[in-house]
Length: 202
Length: 202
DNA sequence: TCTGGCATAGACCGGTCGGTCCAATCCGCC
DNA sequence: GGCGGATTGGACCGACCGGTCTATGCCAGA
Image (cartoon, rainbow over all chains, first blue to last red; front, side):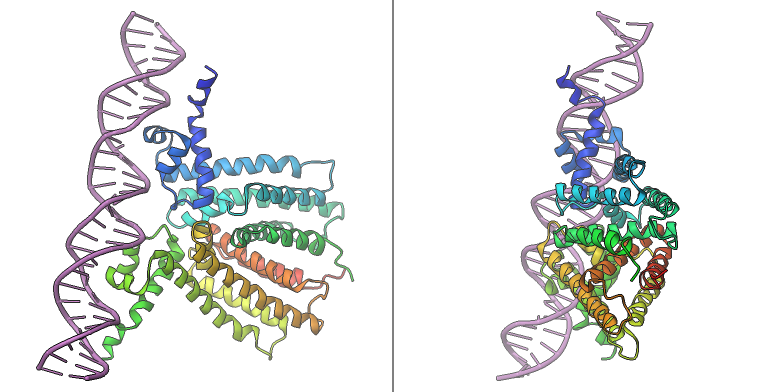
């Protein structure tokens, strides 16, 4: 019975895990369902029992990924023992460490699916947009806290700065995949926390 | 004979133009050759006369796109009648105008193909990397000029700042496609030229 | 005018795609 | 025990994929 726990309800989870891994590497259209199912050791029939189509599967993947990210982020960004700016830095350092772990050829699943399916699939599109907006909003909140205690320059518009950080991070991870090197993430950290949030006064 | 000029050598160019348009929307794997050739009004045999494979075609597309970008950029970035910072701003404003023209659902072809094919295709990968490095280098040069005349804060590392601008721009265009709105590009311009290069002193 | 190679043209190939279908099996509930 | 929905298993489908092949049109140079 303990060995049988691999089946049952977690079949769905196994499909999702295999899809996340493969799509993050090969893309949505670059990887067929058969390959995903083979990796998950699940037959076709089970897939279409849990998901209505490949597109719905993509939406589920994005939501799963987003929820995982937010679950990781919130404890860091909400840690009252750290100053807001320290929390921001900690979050991006954790992100860098994760990229280092799983290798530079594995791009953020959300942005990858976003670019590949934004045009034809409104479902995927909505899921991606939601994920980015949530992240931007979280950052803006921490930025406001930093401004409240004078740690971050109050002339920044918090919402805009939150968007800028997200955009720059996504651009950096994209560049990381292109260069096969985490140097772009180091450029990101150095720019944001030494230059942008560092001493701007002469 | 004038009407026949549509054929002959420019067949290759017609294929490239159709591919650029369709791949920018639907992606490399999301669009079949048949669709490209139908749009270009060219039969299969001609395609494989000019290109060895779909992958080689992708490389040719990236190089064509990169050359087009650089040809547009260089006159602006090298315009000695403008200050370096003004040239930078002009360049991104032109980029924004072009995005406005062709619509927010059309993502930068280079970054799109980069994410989709970076892993399995070393040829495409090399072409993309080359394109980004050239652009970053151009920006770094202009930043150095700006620093030389005191227009840009000399404490910035020019190469890193060039990379940051490219990464942020790519992230912004990605977000533009996700949100179906050019507002992210406005955030980019406001942040870079009002906040980053604007008055940092209190 | 004949000829050789470049370019056009599209039928065709095996393979794989996303998706369908139904029989077999499992398992909680009566 | 046996009933019935949930789940598994995988053969199968038409469509389309990237790529091949050969027949033909075209035109420059002998």
